[in-house]
Length: 162
Image 1 (spheres, rainbow, N blue to C red):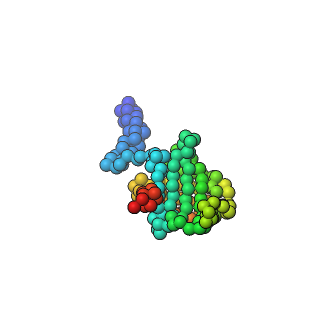
Image 2: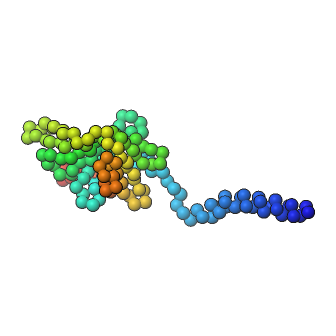
């Protein structure tokens, strides 16, 4: 009877410890998961599909918050412009719910006039480290159709200097 009890106790111990050992075996040879740092978002991003949109991400004066601007790359008298302040999240994404979407008109004298299309828009930025792609989803206008991809690019000022 003592042997049966001892064998049962050993089996129970083994079964309780098995998930810990199984997890270690499954992860062998895989790259450790790295959380994307907020600094990975900083800089300029060009729309991957057509290259028409340019996104600028810069840290704000508030820790953990970033100023994000998305606009047409070409200089035109009228351009759509998104301006938001995004907050870095624990999952490595950036979330905003304060987007201002305007039609910006630049007059010949250099003055600017904004026509507001919407306020307090919300959305998400997510940087995929493996793909080196920044995904942007604006939840305000047809989010299921508005997932745009961006790749890191040089400062637009570098283009003008050449």
